[in-house]
Length: 353
Length: 283
Image 1 (cartoon, rainbow over the protein chains, first blue to last red):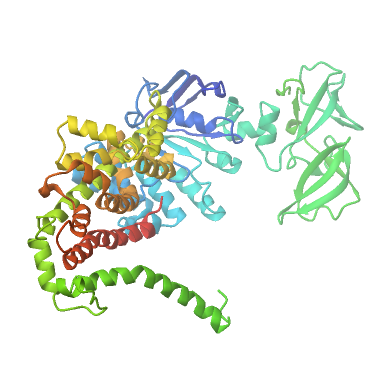
Image 2: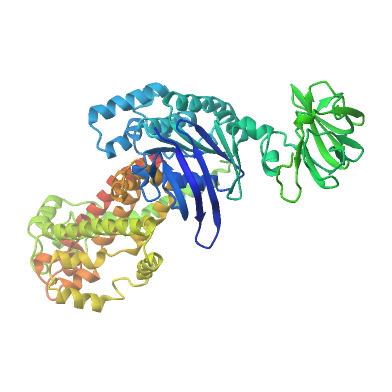
């Protein structure tokens, strides 16, 4: 077992495009690390560099204590699950799973034992003689997992493995992958653009944007204390509301007519800031930081409803239990707890409070 | 499909198809009939459309004895020559072009695209265009009247390389990457993954190239002079043109029919593999 360490890893493609701009973080042994970010943020490139499929322009990647920069993918002791599974179409499920072991000159009976063991764990024993094209998406996904676990690698790498599945299967496989990883206790790095996967699966969440790491932390930390405006709006659905305001002498933020008291901070009065309010943190009729909002539009989601309105010109989305608000046109009194407010510096996008 | 059409429009395709089949099949039938008659019947202009009674005699004579004047060799030997030539060309082309296409698609080496374009440009230089230099090289290497001389100059093939390159580019990169992670080097990946996936392309190319090799006329005509090296296509030509004797038409026709059989067999056999591959292979 081994952790993964990245030290100022950079990737510059020919033609000068910087895909990854000096990324450093640690994935401790046995942790499930999710890289999340919008498409083109460099998360897949980073994963492929850990796998050894992509050369590192500069920096170091270590698996355990071993720097693997110049080591071939096969010798890095990793296993990878691809987005389209990349099963060998002409080989049976058994051969697909056994292929990596065969190439490593594992004895035949040992291969057989391990393939059957993996198949048993994944409940694909009846499928061993089939060809990949005879399998459903979920079954192919399992075979791809089988190919990864049979090798007993030090690190699992997942490149958006669930994006080709339908929504229901995705939820099911999400849980299974996480369970498997915990059972084996193998370090995992998982790339996704789906924030639900990111939140639910990760022990460590790495939010990336434009080739750089925006924030690293546990999912809860990142949700509660987003370090940048980007993280704040990227994690959470519907996204966090951001409204411009002015810092007051008494330490509160004024937005139009409304005043928002903040926890103690050392911010300079008079500055313009961006105030962040998560739709789900805003409550109806709250006494803390109360303000009025004119209802423009209501979306029903079943358990909850999304209320659209405006606060000093900026759009505000509020998520409240279903039935709290009826129809557009009226005004509603809202409130939010002081410790649920986020303040960002509009110039740098960094968190201020 | 539109089902309720006027009877005339339902009949029309059948008429056109039947006409097409007739145009293609009639000469073949005439050749077959010719191969069952005796020499005098054809020479007297009494050619019928009903097969005669000399079929076994003609085929036996053609295969094992040959014509008396022109080719001086049994046709079975010519067929063997043609077969060796066609097989060498077909297999040689497949081996060379699959390897070169693999290099061009999967390896990154200096002047990779230059190499590809050089291969591509040879499409503009078929044997007929470079016949003198090619003949000179083959002659200087002492390969006249040999199987190597017959086949080797025709093996280099841009078509095959191009075809395999196009096919390789449809194989997802992830398969190569998965192989890399599974510990398969370039050669393993080629043998274990690329070759099995290419079976259909290989079959298609084999059919085309076998027929191409079998039908060669100009090149064998130039470089073979000994009777025991002549190919069947050359043989037919020689049988028809005679200086001072009667053309043995019944033997020429028999040879023509025999010359058709191997390509037909290749098409039929390979077509099954080809179709099976089309249905089964999923990339």
